Length: 69
Image (cartoon, rainbow, N blue to C red):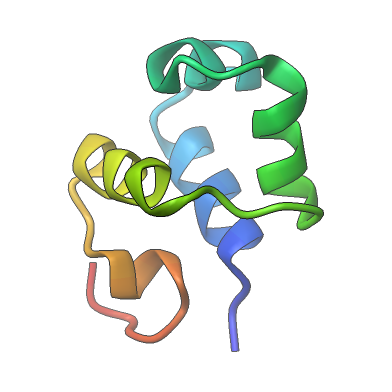
């Protein structure tokens, strides 16, 4: 099963964005965002929804529960 961190990294790269830009979009510290992609942390509910909305995917896709974006 694909991990959350892999999905977030893949989506960010598809948009051609840097980690710093994503942290700014989510209004979190760069290190916090790096922890998402590194698999060390996951966002809270609001952060998960913000990521899904930003990338126009479902939360199930981000969590690896579905392959449909």
